[in-house]
Length: 446
Ligand code: GKR
Ligand code: MG
Image 1: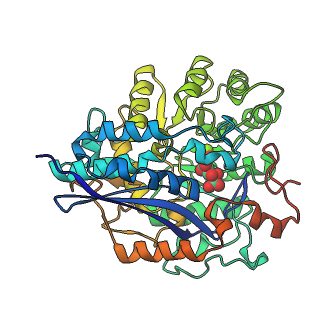
Image 2: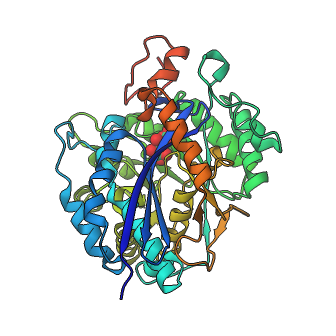
């Protein structure tokens, strides 16, 4: 007899963040996620984590009657059925996030992924195998490399919002991650502190904040401080084709690749514009914006506009992300994963999916270093020497800590409803009154 699901719970949760900057503005003091917990009739728990917000939370809750009573080993069908339940929402423009419109992000996120992950966690526990060994052709590597994801940070003291401060004074990273960081020197100090705590070898700078030239000067400073590191900058499509071409050609020696340099322009989609960019620079391009589903990928691949697909399992599903990894490997392209602010369940999920991705993959993105210390689980994975080692424990290898989960759930319930979705304009307006998002203008360039 295969175990059956007897219970499914959905917990919207919140955690704390720094005033991190990107094209979309300033991160709020809170970030939100949704956590799924399944229980089977053997008494095992399976867990999954996905983006926050009421839209995704309601979708997850609507899945409950379609999940409870199902056999865990039938997980592929269960997940397919959930996927088929979702109708296109009226506000879904179909534009995706090629212009970083955060209102569209919830339609790019595939909420059934949280259930897929929790089911695979349970199946792993049932057959006594780590989750990674249930994906694709099984475990391809015992250790997964993550990159050091660096951000410009604004001065939270310029706001009256409850940003964390002095929450971790144990080392340079704990202190520096809450401090204003807006110069090349401060970015290098941030990278040094992150490297000291986590051992990162490779680095990514979130751009789209200052002028392209100022950000490239930070890339240059990073490259000079860490000559053996692969360095990437991600302005989230803020640069025009002409500016991106000029910047990348001028600073090419300091960059290994570039992520989403350009957005749509002059009636052409980002996929078309990025092809022009590649023709003009020969610089490899990564994306989490212009190929976020199979139809977009068809065009991105046909146009040869990208080399590295950051196939975040939250956008593609765990099995979908591995399907992408297999295709990319067969075609000589590269798999990676994008990230948003997340808890440790997502960190473990990234590690397992990346462990099952065949071929030479790029170090995985994670925002987790900005949240480190806010674990929801016992036995959370640790980044050491820039890597996470896949444990031989079954499933995800972590167990939910109910007390910590309830704290994060209570925080979600206590924050103003506006914070339940991402609203990066709130913090911005303390820095620049009446600030409005503009996908072609870096956040602090107005
Ligand atoms: O957290 O501000 C941020 C990032 O810009 C995030 O929203 C992006 O989705 O990390 C992401 C990316 O690589 O584009
Ligand atoms: Mg990106």
